[in-house]
Length: 456
Image 1 (cartoon, rainbow, N blue to C red):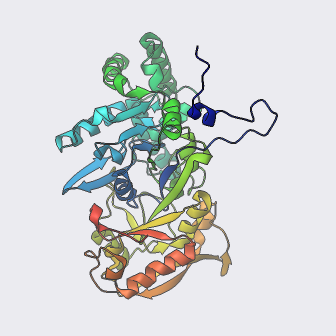
Image 2: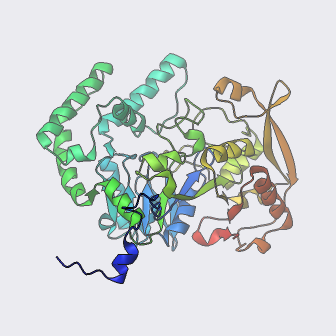
Image 3: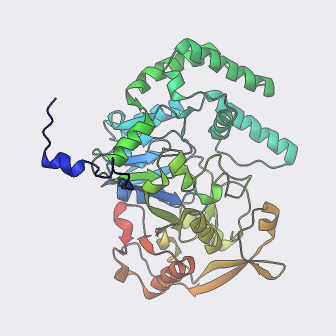
């Protein structure tokens, strides 16, 4: 072994190692940019991710499953994504499905093949799947539907889930009976035994549940072989990406703050953390490596399914927003409920996520309105309340305090820079910015990439 040192070695050595001096803190490495929904989902996160993904080296999903729905339009072609990160469109970037995501394998391959037919070539070679991700089985989806029927019968109301098996899969994970990608790719005999046990567990709870176990196992064995080349240890992969050469890493949140299992309008929420903490736990990223956190909010508010919605407009305004905004869910095809922009919920989302900037989407939908209202505070028994209520009965009773703005009555869809927007639209945007205390970095005025006005 040669003991000659180069100048480079000298520079990299740690002089304090043997001298009892304080060790220098290592450089934190690359930072991940996180894009999150600031309302009840469907804010247009896919567009923001798509914009940033053109320059990203790695694009990651950290939570949720194929209950998410992102539509991205590139060169006039519409791609629908549910499980695949929207960054899969960029042939130069790697897409990673993290350990916090629950994966329905038939759904994953069906989605990939469908987009492949539209021109998304080579996606399988650009996709990495964490070996620690849990699997959503077909029976989880059936159970999801059975649970909804049961809730309807017992309480007269359901949660309004997408019936994609997400809740039951996370329940299996939390009760430690779930099966992961690494189990599927391990000893198949052992996997089969555990799969059968899981089926029996659900059948004892839901006697009407029928599962063709052997048929399911045969299909899973086939999926395992197709999946195998994509599977990596997600923790090591992320560590290398963060601490190797400079890389742009993008994390694409699914769902949104008000659907977060901890912070959302419980129980009308999803089953994962769709706030910034989910990016850390769902990918194995230390908080130190989180960089910009971009919140995405619509210029008005929408919600799918049931649950409190203080600024909802069950009138001509709500209908106009629904039809002009084509407010129909990408995953479920359900009509979205619509209402005025609620800044109480956006500020609450900011408290949890610490947004460094906001993307305000679908401003053009408001172009035809004579006046536009913005919810700025909630009142209970005539008194302003300083927080967002945890209790849904309380949230149902709040009265919203509004600020009213004159409409700009001008088509903004051709605007490509700030100065192209009418003064009244600029005032509306500045008010939102000042009220939340977060700068607005993008304003969306249409469906395609070009319709995102970048402000700074």
